[in-house]
Amino acid sequence: MEFIKPQRVNKALTGHFKKANVAPVKVLREVRIAESKDETKVGDRVLVENFKAGELVDVTGRQQGPRLRGRREALALCRRRRHPRFDVSSRAWQHRRQFVSVARVEEPALPGHMGNARVTAKNLKVIKVDTDENLLLVRGSVPGPSGLYIFIRKAHKGAKKGK
Image 1 (cartoon, rainbow, N blue to C red):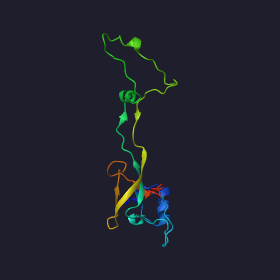
Image 2 (image 1 turned 90 degrees about the horizontal axis):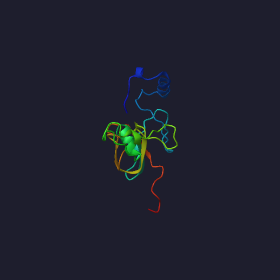
Image 3 (image 1 turned 45 degrees about the vertical axis):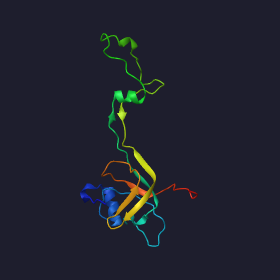
Image 4 (image 1 turned 120 degrees about the horizontal axis):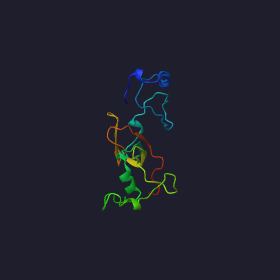
């Protein structure tokens, strides 16, 4: 949990933090937890104590995209090819050139942004829970680059009872 300076928080969030009697944090999420014996209240920290070894979890993070995709990669993605630009003469390719309007029926191959999508890796198995360091060891692929904030919750669709 990373704490931040109070002056870097807007007035709406400052009111939330004051009402909960907690210091401002960098990432704020609402989490549903199952009914427990002890009373949980607003502002309580949710730690790895809620998970057990052998349990299935869903991990949500941001996908790491390759880059901004340009025109050439967009054509390759749509399985099209460019006509040769410099063949015999500089004007030789112009009679084969396709004049395409953006408003045609088939979607044009235009450059665009790839990646940075929200991805959830489902049904990953918890191997070990370290409550001293607040660490969770999970078997499987966790989405996103190193140092990214991820959200871990109990698996929504767990393994079938027959398997």
